[in-house]
Image 1 (cartoon, rainbow, N blue to C red):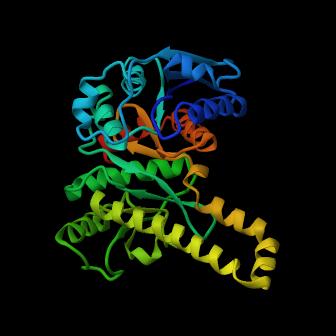
Image 2 (cartoon, rainbow, N blue to C red):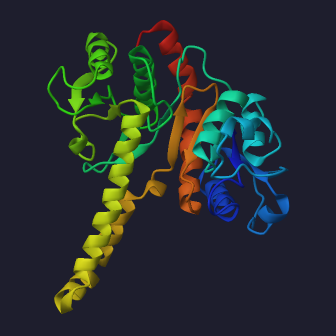
Length: 332
């Protein structure tokens, strides 16, 4: 059985959505067991069945607006997030899923689980939908504002293994987010990374990818530093929401617009689901000794279920062992 720890108190709608997502995961996935860390009294309000589900009482919650995440983790070792992370360190669980504060989760994962020795930096790597109907891995989505080029090579290795083992992509293509597609574009960091990727026979590097191509990329993985990619991600998210609102406003104008809205209701719902992060699950934090999946803070039960499903696949495919072997040998 794959054992998954769930931070039941982290997130905007905890513990209701976390508990319901866990119950859904148990119903849909046969080879998992779940431990919910949190306030047992609150959890029991939403737990309709305890089949393959255990509750561990925690004390306190690390808030979404925590300004000093390292201090919060060190001084709240019995919080739901800290207990869930510690359970992976001790081997009681194989993975953690949390929708708690991102920086607190990253800090807690470093302190309580630890970084994989060959990896010099961790990275947040969410999946985003593309026009092909599949998903693109993007990293780093905010873990490292400053980073060395050689560390990005390691992150590219990790992303490649994840794409091969979890997304089942054969020889995934990797692109570097840049201001232009031509070689030699960008900052010194971009130029150095581009050279390292080009010279590395183990990376299927296709060159620079412009931001306008993110939703229709020529590759399976897009990589950049945490500052750049985080801005790109939030721009995409905001644009998608804005376009959705504008489309709705236009369809509500006039008689024929309203008729069109009714006739296209199903298509509009499908469009919304394609852009919904909840249908993907969460972002894996690359480079740790254990599997940690960050679900969105606003995740509902389906989003949390998908985060658990994603974590189970990562464990089942033994992604961390494969990445460690590759980085240590530097042979793909």
